[in-house]
Image (tube, rainbow, N blue to C red; front, top):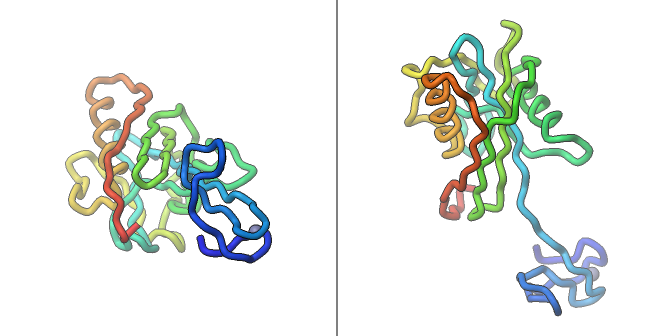
Length: 182
Ligand code: ZN
């Protein structure tokens, strides 16, 4: 951030009085522009022990496989956001099930919140955000072509739970160095 969104003058990075973190502070109107982690919501859409994955039609990680997920919008609940992102990326209206995974990625200021979801119909398919949408069995997953680390963790969790017949909430920290590609 270079300029104040309130008055348009320059901002500087400093720790405000009685604060503990560096903030963008306006030199002119003294507004403090707080920046906080983003919440990413999504689903693990399943049917008959297979998972529906999407091949990204957008950057970053164009052409790689991911679970349907995206930034939570203002005015929606995490469950509504996860449903919406799944519809936008797979073109199918899933039946939302239980909250399944929370991944903290502090290095890049993101929290991923994923629900299990059941695919109820066969009219899923590509959208403006996905080149291809396809069901995968465990042995068919292209582990080297997954778009993000959280996808691997979520798939590992799901297939492990499937094997053990018990699905429980996972809460994890994913270590991930900052990279210009993000
Ligand atoms: Zn200002």
